[in-house]
Image 1 (spheres, rainbow, N blue to C red):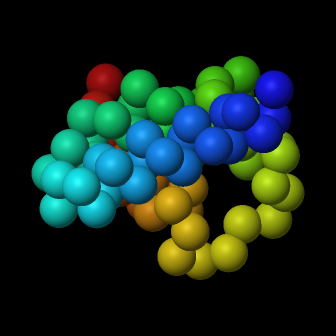
Image 2 (cartoon, rainbow, N blue to C red; image 1 turned 90 degrees about the horizontal axis):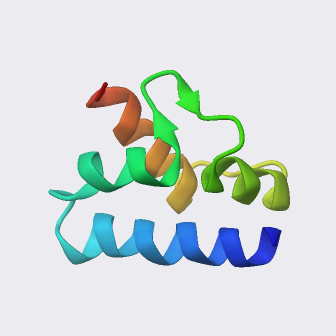
Image 3 (cartoon, rainbow, N blue to C red; image 1 turned 60 degrees about the vertical axis):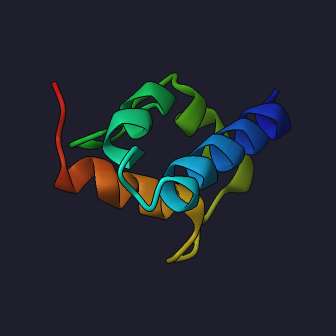
Length: 74
């Protein structure tokens, strides 16, 4: 389950960040489980982060977290 969520978050996140030049990132990030306060517990983003453990700066998950924190949505 962790591997599949990690792949899904990375593929969809990369498409949102790089495929749309970042324009879709504030719309896609909350759907994956990123919020203005961080990663939502029980979401696919949380499962992906648990699978990876410590994340490095510049990774897809860290970019999605930063985008969700900069452009908060309800």
